[in-house]
Image (cartoon, rainbow, N blue to C red; front, side, top):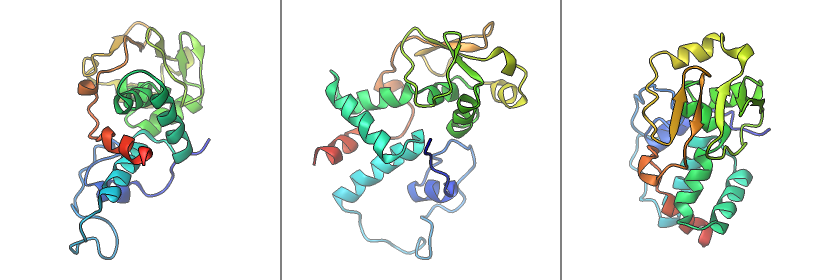
Length: 200
């Protein structure tokens, strides 16, 4: 089960924003490396499109092959390809766990799923890339409801942040009501540039 395990602060500094959702401030607002603080050459159009794709991959914790497969799946569906791609990324189980506030970051959410602490419609699912369908309920497994990491993450979390998810405190989980509209997805990703990159 491949995932990015390299330095995360460097990646966030490269893009000038908190890509991994750690909540930590980026103190040095220039790219990492020996010449990060020097003026760099203007990026080419291709370079900008590639950077946007990389940003999306790092944000959702997806590697290249899986990301391309998702893009091809989005291309085959009806609708605007870029928006459908983001909807597919948003409906991943690890992302749903993160959006429901059960984990502070997507990486932590991925770990909860992998360690069998999460259920979908009452069944344990340990595949982070599992695609949650509208109407399905993602919840904390009964055995895991006392886990400190989950309770700390949920403490004070605003469950009305995302209009496409409905939280149920009784089951300690939430239902995916529908796939999110592009305007509801808070990630700063220019998805059209990704579509143009793969269309070249």
